[in-house]
Every structure is written in C-alpha cells, then in structure tokens.
Length: 633
Image 1 (cartoon, one colour):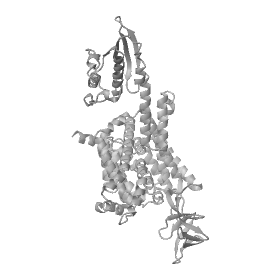
Image 2 (cartoon, helix red, strand yellow):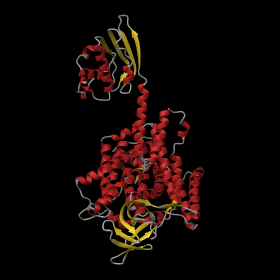
Image 3 (cartoon, helix red, strand yellow):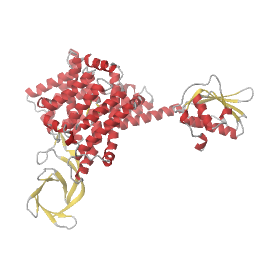
Image 4 (tube, helix red, strand yellow):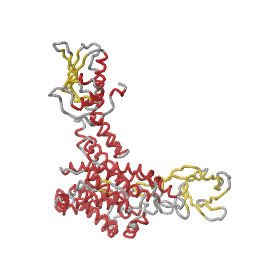
C-alpha cells in the first residue's frame, strides 16, 4: 500500500514540469541513442525501442524518481566486438544466418538484465556507498568531457564513396590475390582470374564486370560494399574501422555554430526572464522554427539518421516485426556454446550499466537533496533490460547527461521518465516526420549546456585544499573515464583511495612503553591494527632485551582483521620462545575467540577484565576454524 501511495505521489506532485521535462529529454536523447546504434552496428529502431522499454520500466519501478535511463553508449560499446563476432559465427552455421550478431545481442541483453536483478536481490546496490567523493567528482568530470567530445563529432559529416554511400575506413589485412600487369591472379596457381581496365575489374571467363576500384578500395558491383583493399601487388582482405568523416566547412559550419550558440544563449537567458517555460525545450522549438522557416541548410535529425548507415526507421511496420517473438528468437541456438559466448559481455555490460546508473543516482541525490534506493534501481534496470532484449531492443542504463537535463528542466517525479519513454514511442510510431526536422545544432547546444552544468567546476578550486591523494584520485578517474570507460575508472579510483587510506592509517600505530614497580614492561598500543600496520606494530617490540614479564595493553587500539590476530599470535610465540611471560589485556570478544581457537595456551595469556572493549571484526569468528599455527607462523 505504501509503495502504491509513494508511486502515485511521485506522479501527481509536479505534473506540468515533469511532462515538459520528459519531452525535452526525449528530444535530447534521440541523436545520442541513434549515434550509439551506429557504433554498435545495429538499426536505430532497435536502440530507440530499447530506450523506450528501459526508460519506461525504470521510471515506473526504479528506486530514483527523476533518473532517466536509455540505450547508453557505455553499454553499446561493450557489445560492438560481440556483434561482429556473432555475424561471423552466423555465417559458419550449416544454414548460414545473416546479421547473427543481432540475435546474440538480444540474448546478451536478457542475461545482462538477469545479472542486474540478482545484484538488486542480493542488495549489492549498497556498495555504491563505498565510492569516495573524489571518485564521484572524477566520474562527473570525466563523463562531462566524454559527452563534450561526443558532441564535437556532430560538427563532422560522412564522406561519400563512388556510389554515394558512406565511405568506409578499411584497413588492409591478408593478401588474397596477386596483381601484376593489369591482371588479378590466384595466389597458388598464379592463374589469371580477373582483368583490370581502368577502374573496372572483369571476370576473365565471363567478361562480366564484378568489381569497381575507387580510392584504393574494391567494391562488389552487386552489393556496392567494399570487399578488398588494393595495393600495387594485390587485393587484401579488410577490417572495417567505421565511416570516414570530414569536418564541416563553409556555410554548413557557420550555420551549425550559429544555431548552437543561439540555443545555448536561450537556455542561459530565458530563466532570467521567466521560469514558467523549460528553457531547453523552448530553445529547441525556437531554433527549429528558425531553421525551417529561414530555409537554413542545417543538418537535422532526419539527415543524421538517414546518413548513419543503419537500417533507418520504418515506423510501425518494423516495430511490429520486432514484436514477433517466435520469429525473433528462432535463429538463436540455445546451447552451452551460446552461453559461453555471450556471458563475458553480458557480465561486463551489467557491471558497467549498474555502476553508471548508481553513480548517476548519487548525483541526482545530491542535486535534489533526497535519497534513492539503489537495490530497487538494480532490479528495475535489470527488468527493463530483460524485457528490452526479449522484445528486440538493445541494452541500456542510467544516462547522466539526459538525467541532468531532466533535473534542470524541473523533472523530479516518475512522470518525467514515463513521458520521455512515451515521447520516444510516439516518435517511432507516428511523429518521426516532425521530429526529423529538429536541427542537430539545437540538440548539441542543449548537450553543451548540460556539460557546463554537469562538470564539477569546484574541483579546480578545492584541488589545493584537499589531500594530495584525493586530488590524484580525482584526476586519474577523470582521465581513465575519458580514455577507457566508466567501470575501469571507478574501480581504479576506489582501489587507489583504499590503498591510500590503508597507507595513511598504517602510519598511525603507536606504542607507549613504561615500566611498572614490579619490573613488568607494559606496551600500550594506540591506533588501528590491521594488515597495513602490522610491520610497524612488530617494530615496536624489543623481544630480546625486554624483561621476563611483558604486558601488552590494547585498550587504545582497534584490532581490525585476521592479519592483526596473526601478528599478535606471532608476538606471543616469540616472547614465549625466549622463555618470557607475556600477558594480553583489553582484547575484544572476537579477538579472544579467534586466539582461543588458534591455541588453548591463550587461556593463560589473555587477561579478562570488565572494561574489555566490545567491537566486532569484519568476519564471523565462528567461521574461523583453521588454527593459526597452520599458517607457517
């Protein structure tokens, strides 16, 4: 009942702002989702439909109202190699299947979602709290830089080949045919197979033209695809490295820059006049109208989609075919080989997706001064990904750029995410002709303003005020996010922060030494005793020169792990080996239990007192059943 009341409240408390913010975000999401579709070599309809399902499910059932999810680039990049390998595997079947990589993608997305649901069920979302603040700042800064650099790609256009298609950047691999004296010969028999006449390559046997040469590339005359690279000595097999792009020039470039600046100016200036209208959506509408009625030669969303080299958008017909589940899943072999193939990609995508989602959720928590439920968000993201894969869509996660746009536009409740998803679906089914007229420049301007809002400019101001280790972590996480990916950056940042923390605390161990009236030497230990401080702890004792009676008092120390317990065990053995009496005071109950299990003689060594500390070690003492004497101490 409480869940239903909270959900209803999140829908009804701010409907106007949520609806307008959702529409704004959907427009800003289209070019990014489509661009990621081209990166992953899948149809834009697949990415847009996936963004709709994931966005809808996470908005309705996620743990963070206001967080926007969709087909994110961090996930899309992971699947690129798998899709390419999947295409190749499909051609090796007894009955070859074209575009087999797409069907492997769907299975991987379903498995990815299942892993994320397990993460939520086992409450792994809480571990995001272990991410230090410098890592969070580095994540935000790095992602802002990545988004900024991605927008620079919008200032380029695709170079065209001899057939008017997007030119492919092909890299030469293995020699396939020899070329000499205008003839193409077999490598082994040196038999002439084709003849070259200018740019035309003909079959010697039939006299038919089979290939056309252009820009050192060999095109199949029927498919119009690049099949070889040509050099002086032969035809080479190729590796496709994507579309060849060139920077906009002249009038196109000036129009693009002008519209971007106009969009940014409206977004900056409108809130100073009125806050009743969302600045980003108003800017998009104004710039679109100027572009249409001004007859400007600006690149719009439709041009961007059609020029991307994907399958394009065919509206309801293509979407309907994706919903034919029996046909959709009939090509995939359900066996152990398929699981082995997709599992590593699915696990990595699930990890990256959850990290980016939970980090974005933390950012929204800070922006809205509220608290989300990480475990619930894990389950919602996983459910959305599973349903997306089942119905033919790609995988996704929380998107920081679109989330910041949503928050800045006033979107706070679940309705904003639902509205975003429904607007995307409307675009897929009915409104594509209208949305296609939106200039890319307007969306780039929105993203640039989002980058400015997202980047933690305060990090420059505090750089000299925070510990050097934290400053290093902040910079490293930012750099790794830009050059590698988010998951690696977060792991690296957490590891460096943890090692730095351990190093600093390892230096805090102290021992105050004093002699009692009866000749007993007392060591009063101060500070944390754990794996990092054991070396310094051992250096405090002068076993050979100490008197016959020694007492170690741990009242001002905290014993944190099994390494500390083992260090105490070794010290006791060394004193006893010298024939000296040693007593241990103020150990916690956990420490006593572990030491008693290690050796019964500790009954005589440990002094029980009413003021013994009461704290717990990280591990359950009852699980410690192996005596420490077996660890070659």
